[in-house]
Image (cartoon, rainbow, N blue to C red; front, side, top):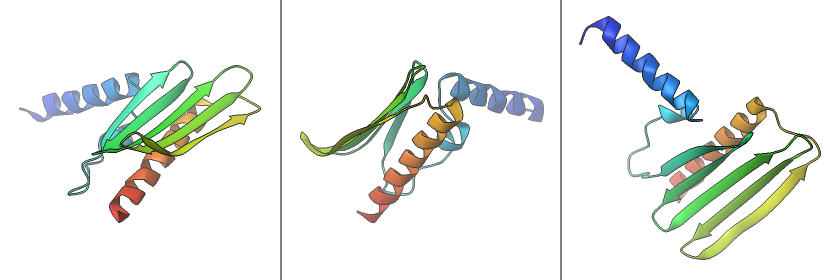
Length: 117
């Protein structure tokens, strides 16, 4: 494959990731050896959700944005037992950049905690 085709392929993949709500920085990060985290980011209206799983553990974050406010839901469960189930309401909508940053921070936090276990 020549350099131009390879460059076009990489750009096409990046465009697909952006269109499907996957920040390129997260999508390109390879998992650490033995980490085996499955990460799925989905666009939900003006917000996003992320589901991260590793064996029997699952982490979930939903950011729901309306014109009036933003609601952030965080859950962590192992098997069928919830270890964390919390939500917070912000009195203003979050910007797309704030949503992306919150999702990225959450994913990085889970990755760090999963490595320590």
